[in-house]
Image (cartoon, rainbow, N blue to C red; front, side, top):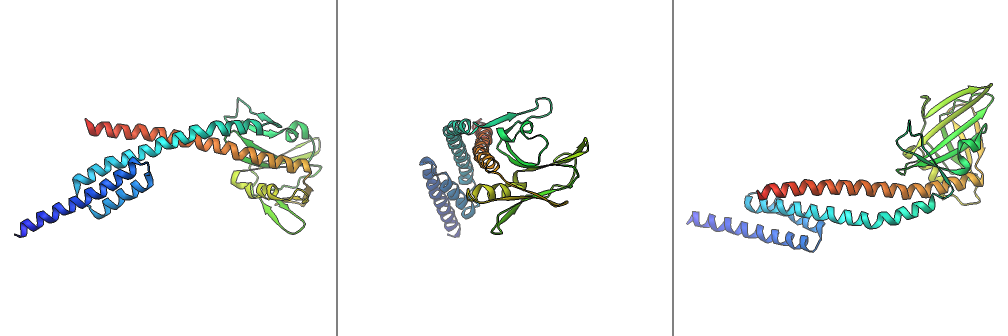
Length: 270
């Protein structure tokens, strides 16, 4: 009698597990992939001993993940051409710079902010690389070095934003002297400058913004309308280029995941 009860109980558990599996299957077939995964996780938690059902649930989970990957690829394929078209429009006014010998990734620089157009002067340069990483550079030119390591943007009302501090390293922070004059260039990339970029981007057009070179001897300048236009245009282009890069990466990951899942499913069938 006890054995019969155990068998009935076991059968009951399997029946409940299969009912839960059917729920997950329904979600999968209607492409509610998140709900399907949650249902499978619940099944695994509640019926850890139903090996046969769990084996089927594993296969279903792989199909769910494959479905997600297919949907991700379709999304990227539909949106990427739109973003590419937007990028081409935003690139107007920018110059593309790339040293093929030393650089794998080129940069888009606002035409008025190229090095050639700003010889022997202090100014704020901005640009964005092909993958959407924005940067600011504080360029100093003067008769004496100031040895600066950072940049602070501020308005008359006291609001401000700062870049990260970039210690002298001969690369992102470099200096040289020529004919008695010193040039210093400190470059702040991505997260190191985004607060300062957003400060300028979100400021009112009439706001006068002061750029202070920090970490060394005092030096400052005020951003011109051209400076602010350059930063805003670069911000917009960076947003679109970073979207394109993220979609490229997501599509590549999804394609690799499909290949992996297909190999597992094929192995199961053999």
